[in-house]
Length: 192
Image (cartoon, rainbow, N blue to C red; front, side, top):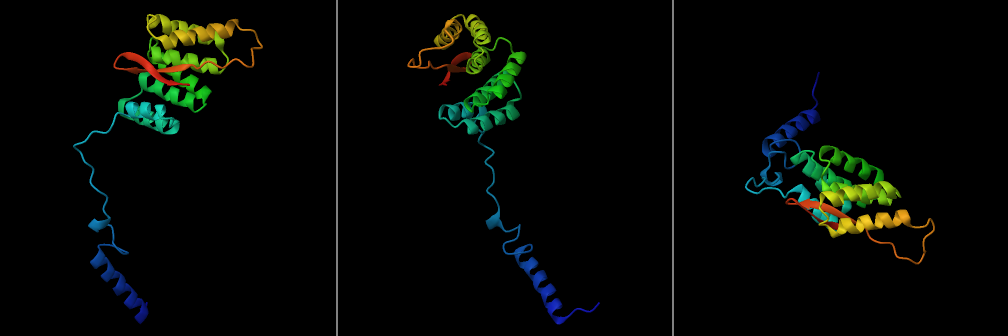
């Protein structure tokens, strides 16, 4: 096979480019100017749950869900992480997913008060007032009646059960409250 003068020049040009740039093209892979910055191993990443809680409070529900999923990959699946994921799904309007995830959290830890409360909120949103009342009662008992938000959620569920089918259209809708766990205490997460 014969190389033409043009083909020979092209091959020599490519070889010289490889020698001067460390690879094909301008700036090759070994060029330190194009290298990504080194990771700072001395700093720890923020806890995914805390980041997610802040994002949820800021109304950034998709980002909060991503932070909670990151926490699940770092910490493993536990009731706290599942409760947070369920809460983010609730805020995104994914009621079926939220219910399923919160029920899974309660399978892992049946006495986890934030998951119970948040499951009750999901059930209320779905119009399942009887089941919501039972879940809120369980959360209220486990919390020893210390949480005003659980008490208010329970009262709302009872009122919905006793209310006539057709309510007053001018009456303002009450706000249900979500809870999360912080250092062994259930604290208000956000208003729904």
